[in-house]
Structure formats: structure tokens, C-alpha cells
Length: 132
Image 1 (cartoon, helix red, strand yellow):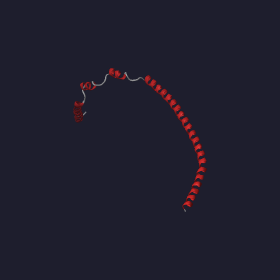
Image 2: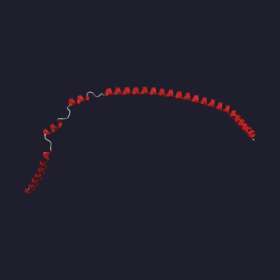
Image 3: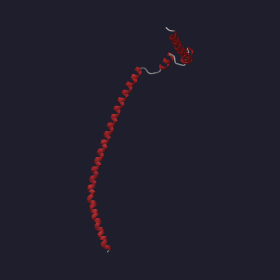
Image 4: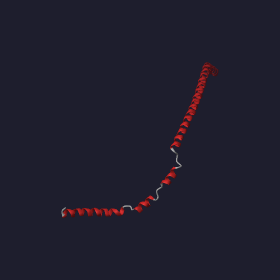
């Protein structure tokens, strides 16, 4: 290797070394890392924290129970809806029956109304004659 090549290589190495020296003070030391890790939970603390949580089997059982309750509630609701439908049908029958009765009463009263109108007109004529 020629002397100029060696000098160039040394200059590059020196440049890299200076860049590394500038970065080194910003890097964490072992003590810094220990200090940063200290507040983190240990395995034992994590196990203790997880202990009160439900297991997969417990969750599976709870879901099964919820599904059963949901099915029972659906059956009960369906029965209630059927009761309401029956009640609505009874009310509809009663309204239809009353409508027929009202129609009968109206058809009975219509001739009477017409007679009253005729009598009213006759009375007005008689009153008019009497006044004149």
C-alpha cells in the first residue's frame, strides 16, 4: 500500500472515530438500563396480576350460559308476542262486531230522521200560515 493510500485510510478512520466519540456519550450505560428496567413488573407480579382474570374455560362456560339465557328470553318473548297478537285479534273482532251494530242502528235511525225532517218542514209551513 502506498503512503498516500495509508494516509487517506487513516484520515477516514479518524473521521469515523470522531463521529463515534460524539455518539458514545448519548448511549445508555448498564446502570442507565438497570434504572430504566427497575419500575417494570416482574414475572411474579405479572402472574399475580393475571390470576384474577377468567380462564378460557370459564369464558366458554359464561358464553354458553348467556346463549342459553338468550334462547330462553327469545322463547319467552315469542310467547308474549303471540299473546299480544291474540289480544289484537280479539279487539279487532270486537270492533268489527260494534261496527255492524252501529251500521244497524244508523239504518234504523235514518228513516226516523227523514220522517222528522218531513214533520219539521210541515210544522214550519203551518207556523208560517198561522202568522200570516
